[in-house]
Image 1 (cartoon, rainbow, N blue to C red):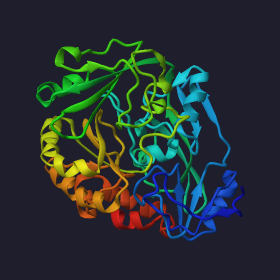
Image 2 (image 1 turned 135 degrees about the horizontal axis):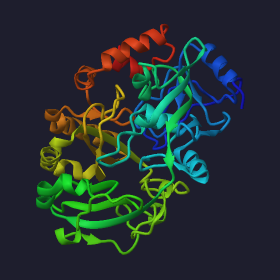
Image 3 (image 1 turned 60 degrees about the horizontal axis):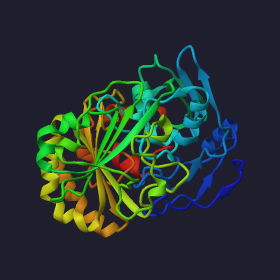
Length: 422
């Protein structure tokens, strides 16, 4: 499809957002992308549609990079891969692995686009693993003028571009730090009491390369613990069985009743990094589908107190909640990463797709986590006000000034960004 061909705007992946864009443009080259940007007053980049708010919407046109040339170019001497922005993490990872290389971490869904994931501050898990954006060591981006710029590792604005929420331009390629391929073994345990979590939270979350807890914040405590261990490392361990958890002997899905065919291999069987670090297989529809997601990141030191506050509203959450996931993320340097400059714990909520019911509980979550200066994920729903966003993201004002400089006419400034940035 060329830049002269458009299709009607549709919905996001979950179906809770109906885009207001007049059309979706799918250029097949950088030249076509540049013309698409300069020939439209309002343009917003559209990734894999896995955002649950209107960060990727516009009253102009959306631009998708799915028809652009797909490439993964590796510079082994620098340990850097130049990756087409429109590729999904599954596509990029498979190519990297085939050539003997790996990314340090992945999100739970490999279906999301590489550029969309880093641009919204998406992360995986692990006390020693920062957000996915921290692996970005360079950005190639089309500005509002149509010019393409390269932002390298020595550019002082790189940290602003790592999580750019679409405000600085349309990314065409990312330069990502890579390392030699590795294998991961994943185990799942069920059932862990709140008393154990309160006493040993950080120890449990540190016992592996990547650890996730799943809960409903009810009296049943932690329902599942997913532990991913690299076979080439000797990370700390915790005997979860001795703490009362039960090792899974068959595949388990985080959402009760969902098809376990979609989850990645468990029971401790080692396999390639890109087939174990995500929770879901790229060949299957991920998670619950018809859902709405919310997530907040707050200082890791406040995890136990934050869990207590969420347990206090557990009864209100229960009717609309599929499951919540608790993860740890190391501090990074991206200005707008929710884990910027602080080791963080993420509280993630997967809700039923019921707009009214979700809207009713969002203020409860905001209030419960407000004492900890919690920061929302840029691609998920929140009731946080713009004023509060500026309070919890210290670099947001500086980012808004940079966006004004790079996009003087507001070509990329959609309603979401106008509310947040001004």
